Image (tube, rainbow, N blue to C red):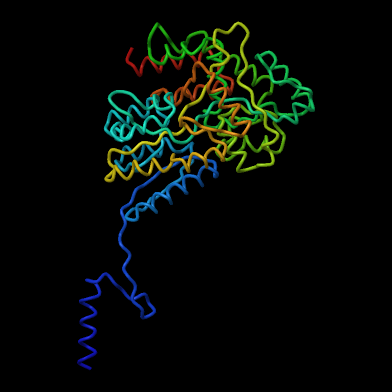
Amino acid sequence: MKRLLLTLIVLIIVLPLSGCFYDGHMGMTTQRVQKKQLTLYSIQGDSAVNEVITDSVNRFEGSNSGFEVVHELIPNDVYKSRLSVCVATNQMPDVFPTWSGSILKEYVSIGGVVNLSSYMSKDDYSSRFNKKALDMVTFGDGIWGVPVENMSLAMIFYNKSIYKTLNLSEPANFNQLKKNIEVLKEHGYIPFALANRTAWTGSMFYMYFVDRLGGPEVFDNAANRKNNGSFDNEVFVKAGEMVQQLVDMGAFPQGFNWMDEDAGDARNLLYNETAAMTLTGSWFLSNVKYENPGFYEKIGVFPFPAIEGGKGNPNNSIGTLGDNFYSVAGSCNYTDQAFELVQYLIDDTAVLKRIHAGKIPPVNDVSIEDQLTNEVFDFIKKSPNVQFWYDQYLPPKLSEAHLALTRRIFGGEDPKHAAKSMEDITRQYYSQ
């Protein structure tokens, strides 16, 4: 009895010190070492890219046995508000996506992100990336993000089978596009799939009308308060009127202002061949490859058409050259490993997987075989100006105003009144 008691005492003392415990089956197992954690947010709605991210995370963890990555996928349309809460509560994820623009600049101004210049200069790592993409996150005295996900343009994707059946051609100008819309309506098709509940989808039409009518200078002057620029400029008014021309023609599905892009409401209209076209980012190709690969062969693509008499170059485009960029939070305790995790997201293995998923990685010397993806890539290369999305370029308050007013234009509000409201809000914001 004394021997048994002595054995139990020894076990009680020794086991905690040796890092061992009973596994419930009277066998001893080595205690699991507590790993350091990195949190990663991503907002890619398409599962093909999520698989690429998961693979990158797994490979990072395989090379860094002392770390585990807590990866959280957040729907695109709720991400901004989620990140705002993280900033307000000082609970930022270690690695997170941004779109560049004023929102990123605000995070920089409060010390919310790490200056990555030293990491990007090591071994000339920055030379890996498309210069225009890297320029989008280079300002002040630093580089504040890494281009990772995709070079993406807003273009018009259409069902080639429907176009062929109705003997339609890709329109070169807005009048030709309107004629196509009329023919599609006559044959019972919804011309454009659009889910505009969160407004950034419809904003693409508005942005293109502004660009085609007045060129990129009109928005640049209004947004940056220079050269007497203003958001009640006649170009913005005319752009709103042209949006309403499409609405009045019945170019969009019934209830489009309440349909949900994240839920696939617009894409499903294309998949079931109820709708013939959509104006959306070229990430659409990756969505289709994963969700409905059989539909992929039916897709054609053309740029937003020119407007007769407009000052904008018809080769200009709306989009981003790094959707998304990944930044490291200023609160991160393991900055070196966080940057290494970002590198895994866009290393050679990830680049090949992203291309296979239908993406155009923002790195140099990209080789793409897919014909559709190459058409988008060719247009990127010949675009003299790629206008960044208004809602990402503008400061948050003005971004919210732009989206709300654009949605109201789609809903019938007087474009002149909407333009004046946007200018009034902007003047108040800048205390002019």
